[in-house]
Image 1 (cartoon, rainbow, N blue to C red):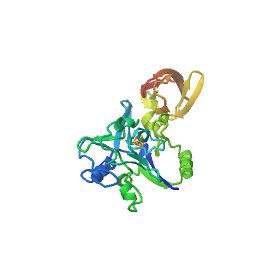
Image 2: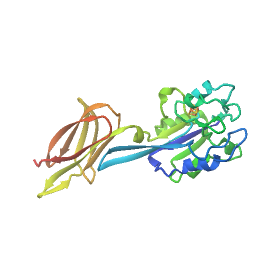
Image 3: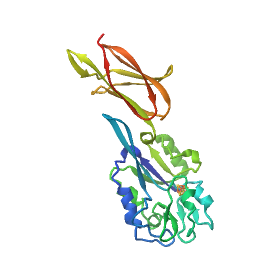
Image 4: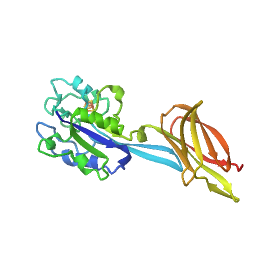
Length: 282
Ligand code: SF4
């Protein structure tokens, strides 16, 4: 049986908000009997784009993380629902019944991802339902996928075995696997949002002028263990990415054929720019 999955590429999301707007356009003021009651115009973010800024000037980057109902295969919300108010369809989509769920405000807190919103006026819990009403009418993808201008969102109606192969091939991850909910929403390049970097810039005097040193070798170590080795770019910059936050002390050794090597220690709490590292001529 083919089931729906969503893949979000964090590297491609540039916060256009088109996915969020497509949901508002589809559901605000529109009810779909048997699927969902209408979404309030304000206050709900059934697709919510989170933002994470990393580093310090001049080495700063920002990543955006679209989040939504994960259509979990072991959904904690389903377990908490009374009266079969939340069910999983054979195609993998998790549905909150707008009639049966009426008054069940506790379901908002039952979702460990914060994906359920409480409609105060109608007294119903609501979440993004993969646009099931459109898919059932023959649509090939939900509106958020269609609306994304960068192709950051892709939906797949495929067998679980094929999805597992895709997860393996593309190193896809899910949010908070420790919840054990087994989401059907996967992320590519998730580390750009969740991990940290150690970066810096390397310079040296050439003919009396301070120049960026491209092609210098930077080696990252944790204790005696070598973690990674990279070369500085045309601007003399290096960046070791996808490191765990609060992962303790590292050392960075910088080497260049025409300059003396230097080694600096750095404590990694959050992403850190080590500043300008000037090498002395040999
Ligand atoms: S993300 Fe939350 S609301 Fe969606 S299926 Fe999982 S537990 Fe339920």
